[in-house]
Image (cartoon, rainbow, N blue to C red; front, side, top):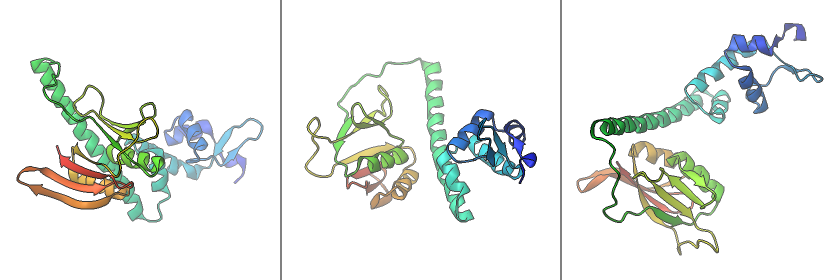
Length: 237
C-alpha cells in the first residue's frame, strides 16, 4: 500500500479512539506497530484495516486488561484460548470488586460508628520465612495468585498494608542476613474466594495436596504446595 493511502497518526487516533500517547506506547511495546515510519521525522502512519485492532485494544483496556494479556488474547491460536484469557481476568475483577465492596462496607461502618484505633489484644503471626528455588518463579507465583508485592528492601512478599489486619510478610530466606528453615515451610492464608484462588494457584504451577472441602470445625479450606515445595493452607474468609 502506498503512503498516499495510509492514515496519519492524528487521523488514526480519531478513528480508533486512542490517544496519541497510547498509540506511541503501543508501538514501543510492539502491540500496535504502525504500517510505516518516516526514517527522517519518525512520523507514524497506519493502514485503515488497523483501526479494528486498535478499537479492540481500546475496548480491552477499558476493562483494565493488562497489555501482556491483551497481546496473549490477540495472538490466541483459537477462540477457546482467547476466552481463557478473559475468564482469568473476570476472576481477578470479581475479587477486586469483592474487596472494594468490603471496603465500602467498612467505610459505612466508620461513618455510622466512627473510626476506632485497633487494639492488639493477642499475638498474631505476621511473618513467615520460606525457602525458594528460584526468586523470579516465586515472584511470578505469589504476585499472580495473591497479588503480593515483592519488597526488595526487606526481601519479602507483602500481603496487605500495615497497620491493616490483613498485613502479612512472606520473607524469602537469604544468607547470611536471613537464613531459612531446614526444609519447606507451611503457612495458612485467609482468602476472599477460596475456590478461585485455589484454582489460580494450580494454574500458576502449584501442586494440589487437598481440594477445597467443607468441615464443621473450621472454614472451607484447601491445601497445595508452591513451586518451591512450601505448603500453603487456604481458608475461606
